[in-house]
Image (tube, rainbow, N blue to C red; front, side, top):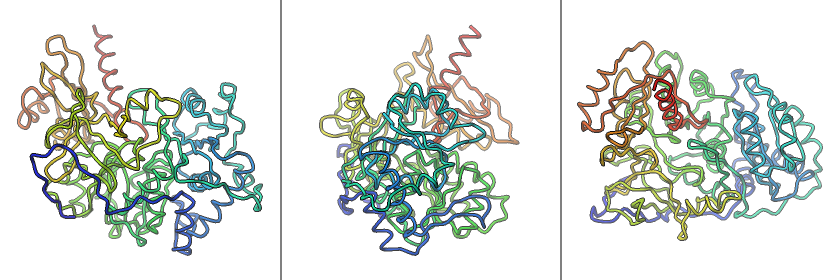
Length: 539
């Protein structure tokens, strides 16, 4: 792509690229089209460690088995009802995703790491009438957990263990007609990541998810010769939408490992001839840490796409040194999820510091968070977006919905960023995370990017804490690479050489690991709480 300069005097607004059409189709339409276009091509591979035992489905088989799932579900539930799935990444997840969509049901996706209280909250708030549950996950009895909280869930009629899934599907009636489904029907309720508190249920339609995944796949140049390795959790939009539906609509093969392990990702690339890996930055950090010692043929791997959390430019450079092309996306659950994306071989002179231009059919503007006025290009403000991918609403929460989607249909993301002269977006971090020290605005992302260039720093996060003299000050949390040493004075000196003095943290904490959401976002509120609790205890 050739990046074209805009008039630098323009306001921070980028109109929608209309080169790609928004299609009025459903999951079922996309699945049937793929089965007709690539019937014998491999669609889905179970990415287990035992290569010989991996189950495989062609597009034709994927359609046939998804329709069988839909008929079985239709005998128990009515179109429009909410059915939850609580499971890690297994092929049945994909079949249930398509089967529920074909049956006209709304699939509620649940993080398998949830404990009882979290599960009960989500199932009750989503009004789930059933939950399909993996019996055990990481030595935890998920089925027992469901039974423990079932008395709190009067709307929950059925609990379906995955251990009996085959018999459940076999109980379906082939003569049962499938539901009539429209693109505007809600396909899934995806819950926000919960970096700031209780998650909210974003209602995403067939049109939202199908088109966003296709726009993403086309943007990264995916085709029917690509093999997608997908370590992203399926309960997240990146796993069950971008990768699952992106590969579906471009004829690619979707390889689904049960969990993320860096060595296993490289093994799958070699054994399945993987070409595309979709992951969050923390995953790529771990892969690059072991890639040099891996004696594997990785020549098929052409592209890694990154999103879900801030992407340090230094990480991109490290991946390029390994011969990988990199593309970076930005979005959120409420946008199905992507709003912007760079391209492989992007010609923007500094693309690796951006998250790219808007995806087709998406408008972006940057506004003053206090006045709502669009700011001049290059100035920092809140990133807002409008287009086909914006969620219908938050389930049963009109107040929260109106707080993020205004009367003109603009989604106010809560992220701070800017638009440059090429129409590319840069992200500075969450609006709530901006630090105001003595009247000066400090953006943690800028400090974190500097820290990521330090050879001893594996990961870094900066948060603001109250200060009697300055109002707020930054605190730097740092994770040191194994085998390296670094002290506070070295970090301060390193930052002072690269940042204005007022931006340099004077308070530092070393961490063995950071609290993260399942999608790889650092939970800064927990780091802030950790520091404040420490001060309270010591005070």
